[in-house]
Image (cartoon, rainbow, N blue to C red; front, side, top):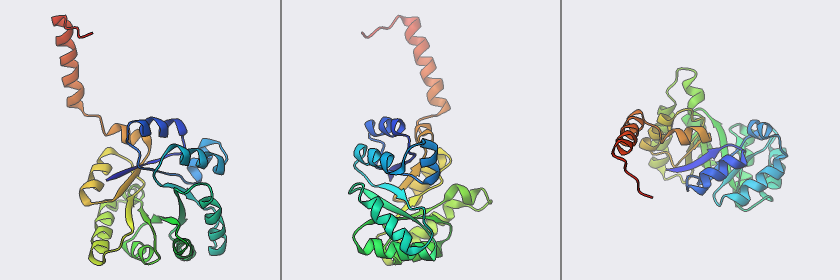
Amino acid sequence: MKFFVDTADIDAIRELNDLGMVDGVTTNPSLIKKSGRDILEVTKEICDLVSGPVSAEVVATEADAMIAEGRRLAEIAENIAVKVPLTWDGLKACKTLSDEGRMVNVTLCFSANQALLAAKAGATFISPFIGRLDDLNIDGMELIADIREIYDNYGFETQILAASIRTANHMSDAAKIGADVATAPPAVIKAMANHVLTDKGLAQFVKDAADAGIKIV
């Protein structure tokens, strides 16, 4: 499963990228706002830093305006994936932009029917939101499984990008189901390394090494 990092924080992206943990980046207007930077400037810097897809989201809601914004965003770099919402206008924009050879990430997906429409419209990525479904006491992983089954049934090439990831368990669950990509905040990706038994075992090793006076360099 590919890891996309869900942030516009350049330092956080660089740290994970240097470790080989970044296959792409996703941003949205909320993350751009949090960065406090111009969308075109920070997106260009991210694209220069990572080689994989960088999702940059339109802010328009009408199809023609989305298409115009998508074309402008795609001019930033070759690895831009234009991010559009899963609305009827968003699907129109997806179809036009994908027909022009641009990567398109259709976001805010909450049903298998929506995911089917996005695939038919030529989406490169579909972004089902796991955490927001969980907030409503709906199992977000069931949606990932349903989309996986539908896409496999008909050979759709649209990649399932598990989004709204809240926990390390979300990452492993998405991987087991067969999501192509998971996008998560840096803190969640780093939390995947944590385990209480690892901490306990390491503490014992450190104590024993100190008691034995073990030195390597």
